[in-house]
Length: 163
Image (tube, rainbow, N blue to C red; front, top):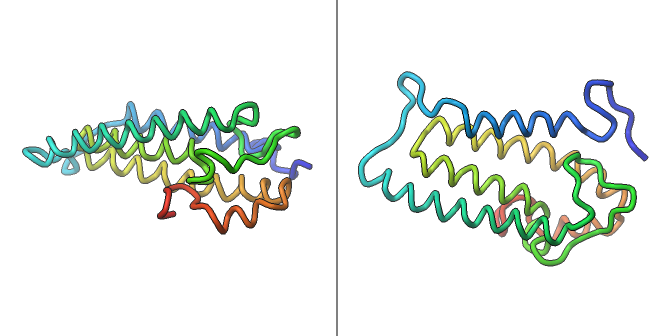
């Protein structure tokens, strides 16, 4: 059963998807520097580029694995599909939200590759947004799948082994 929401939020949490894409746009197309907030340079920027590219690659792998294991259950909105099945293997055995994890890792990797303090801030905002979105999503998942609460206790939410 879908919880009643104000008209602007949509019954399945559609507004989360709109905000998500706005944040993606900010990350990719937003300014990389503003006044005093800029980029770091020198050797730090070189190391940051390599670390950023590696982190981005790991992020892309998590996104890909999440998509493969989720399969037909995939939906952009926080509310699961009516005919969804509970997936807790593969990438979902490492982290409860591997697609979001991958996006977060890729966002931080992108920011590091740009060596931009402002872009790091955008990535942090995206992380906070996904933390908020997963709270809503997990409320629906606990309602749909009774075993989800135990899964939450076993598996990290967004960052494997950390959070």
